[in-house]
Structure formats: C-alpha cells, structure tokens
Amino acid sequence: MKLKRILAVAMATTMVLGMSMTALAADGDATGDGGANGTGTSEGHVEQKHLNVVLPTAAETTFAYTMDPERLIQTTSGGKYEEETTFPEAAGDTGVYFLTGEKTYSNTSSDLEIINKSSADVKVDVKVKTEATAAGTDITLATAALDGSETTPKLYLAAQVGEGAGKSTQILSATEAPVSRILAGNAGNYEIVVTTDSDGNKGYAYQQKKTGLTAWKSLKFNITGAVTNKEITAETTAPKIVVTWAFAEKASDDTTTVDTGVSDYVDIPGPSIAQTSITIPESGAVSVPVSLGEGTKAATGITSVYYLSQSGAKKDIDATGYALDTAEDGSVSFRLKTVTVDAFRSGNSDSRVYSIEFNDTAKTVVSITLNK
Image (cartoon, rainbow, N blue to C red):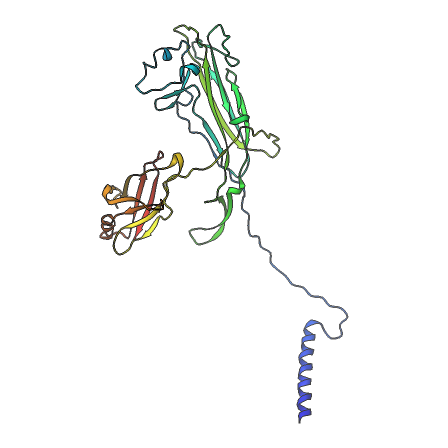
C-alpha cells in the first residue's frame, strides 16, 4: 500500500510538471514564437517658460524738473515754496531739481525699476531723449558733464542706468539713445504642481513657488541734471524729458550678454494672514496669526474691518470689536472679539467674509471667512 501511495504521488507530480512545461513550449517543437501588445500613453506637456516682467508705474512728477540757472532758490532759501520744503545743500547743489518726496527736491530723480520675475531671460531697452519746446526758446543742452568752464548757459541732463560699477550714463539730446540690458530669468523660483479643476480633474501647471524664493534680477534707472550758474533771459525755457522702456524675451539667436549694473531684487512681504477660513467655536472670540510684513511694506496696525451685508452694503466693525495682539515672543494675532463673533453667531448666515485693511503704504486688504 505504501508503494502504491508513493507511485501515485510521483505520477501526480509528473503530471503537474508536465503541464507546467507544456505552458512554456510545445513538446517536441524545434522553434516557437509569440507576442504581446502594450498601449502607450503620454503624461502630457507643461510649458516650462513663464514671462512676468514688472514695469514701472511712473508718476507724472518722476522726471518733471525745474532748472534754476540763477540760483534763485538757494539765494532765497527756498522762500517761494511751502514751509518744510527741502532742497540740496548749497555746496553740492547743481541747480536742477526733481521732486523725490512730498516736499523734498533732489538733483537726481527717484529710481524707476524693471523687475524680471520670469523663468526666462529678457532683454530690456531704456530709451531717453529730450523734446524741444515749440517756441524754440530752450536753453542749450550740454554734450558733456559741466566742469565750470562754460561761458554761456547750458543744461546737462543724463540717464543713469544700472547700479554700482556697471552703471551706464547716457547724456540726453534730441536724438533718442537706447540702453539695453539682459535680465536673467530665475527658473528656480518656479515649479510644476498638480492642479484640480472645478470638475475634480487633475492636471499639471507651471507656476511661481509660494515660498523659498531667491532674488530676481532688476534694472534701476533715473535722470540726473545740472545747469550752469549763468544769467538767462526771461523767455528761456527747459526741454521736456522723454523716457520709454520695453522688454521682450531674449531671442535664441541674440548674443547680447550685457548685464552690467543689474541688481538683485527680493520680494518684501506686506501684511498677510495665512489662515483665511475659520470655523467658529461655540462661544468666545476668534483669533488668527498675522504677519505685518517687512521693511518698507510693513504695517503697524489696522485701519478698518468691515463686511458686506446680503444687500451689498458695507458694514464697518467698531474699533472696539477687534484687536491686534502681540505675544511675548513677538508673534502677532488678529482677534475678532466676542461681541463681534456673537453678532455673526446670532445671524442667519452660515458664513461671513470680513475684510481687514492694514495701515501700510499699499493699504493692503486681507479677507478672512468665518463659518458656523
């Protein structure tokens, strides 16, 4: 009996092995063939180039100027102008004035700046010239910096493009003169992210990073001026300054490599609130962390808080209904006090958007939503 069982097991094993071998190749075949198909798909394409160039928003007064060949302003200590108006010190005054503050005049205009926040390089052109007065009574324009040897009244105007050792000076004349620079892009400030549309479909997008940004490249420029200390006639006029700027993506065959005088530009954050949607507790106030910003863009407080009613009417929150709280570690929080939150709790709306206006120069407004 034992022998029969052993033989049975052996035969069963042989059958299994034989069947396994049959799946690999037909018994006795000298050749064989086969095949398999696999459908190919593409994950898609994301354009990894983004152009974003921030151009100046020049006020009308940026390059407006006053020339004073006879130094009337210094002689009278600026008596013609409003109180607290300041001018350059007499020792270094060149007699040409640009308004650079509310009541501040300087011999050089405020800077304008072009910032390349692109992932690709761009070519920037700054063009400058003067435009003569129709009457033909303009003061003579100097073709070089004034050195004191001039015997007749002359006006010197020049564009200063760039900063530091790479700064370029272009003397203004009636002939337009361009200054070109390359502003490198910063692809490291961009990333590919997964997006979801309103239907829940996922895709890809190439966009600027939210955090961890490094410096962009920028180009600053201004106008400086000087006028001889010579007597002029009452009819003598000053020419108009014309400055234009433009940019374009650097062409693949463009061999321009001039990037001297280019600056690093770092985004300075203004006031912000990261948590913008809050589910209110059953009782008490609501508080969220706040960043007041940095440097020249920082706020020191809040100007107003308001919401819009269902009819669209603006409803201001009394200043006693909110607060900015500073902790011992210096962190700041915005708090809607209990009285304000209770007013929302007792209403019929399931959510309400509160707008918070900070007192920074830009008057930044950040919105938060309270949900029941």
